[in-house]
Length: 360
Image 1 (cartoon, rainbow, N blue to C red):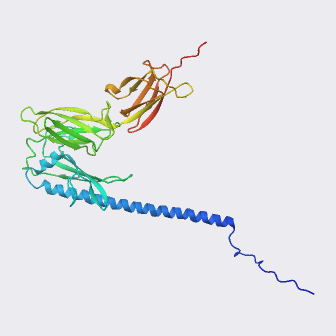
Image 2 (cartoon, rainbow, N blue to C red):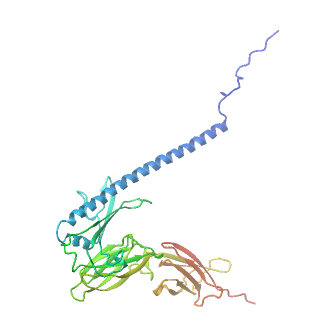
């Protein structure tokens, strides 16, 4: 009687290996974990680079403040000289570098912007809130440091107040012009460049966190000097659409604070008019006129009648407010197309063609 041959390779258990599906799942899980780990590593590296940049910027800001403190006490006239400089960029280069150019550290270029203005408070909480007499002002020094590819990182800012000795000559004949700049929502607009000038005299500063810029001036004896103010900022306009509005301050006498100038100034917006028929299809309306009105604006931008030059029209450098547009010069009975532009935005407003009716 023959015995059956022993069976080989028929073991069943947990060591039978991975199936193809299990292998694919394992690879997917491992890949997802790898991507997550790599993302964390890259974020940590980027954060480390950003932290190094902020540390270098903070050191440059502190260095500029220290240099200004030393210059402030050099002589009798030093405080007034610093104030007259207004806003300057990269005034103190690093060893071996050139004044006015970015300061380079470890291959990265940093821009140091220093703004100096007098805190001549008059009778209000700030110089822009009223008052006409100058008591004993202090000098506000603000330093902002920026660098390339900052992304969402905020600039490093350092500021200080310095009180000159009462014998420094800041009192008496010293005069100031305070300029208040607000955005379209009525809130302060900081960081805007302000120039006060008359004849051969021109002084600059920038608005602080309260939207107030204070500029020291030197009016003539007697009746004083008639000054003008000009405000500027990249891609900004005033309520009349002017990118660099010019305002007359009026006469400024010696030993006074003039806070008459208050400006609305914000990021310019863009309005794209798109002409459509009753189905919403874009239509070439060349030869027609379109009326565009702006709520709250002034001057030539408040109401304009423009010739249409195609199926769309683009209006740039607009004050951010509500706009209404319609074809022709008579508002339609059922209301005109309306849109509210946010500061710095570009938005499309569809303007329907008038219903001409259907012929017999």
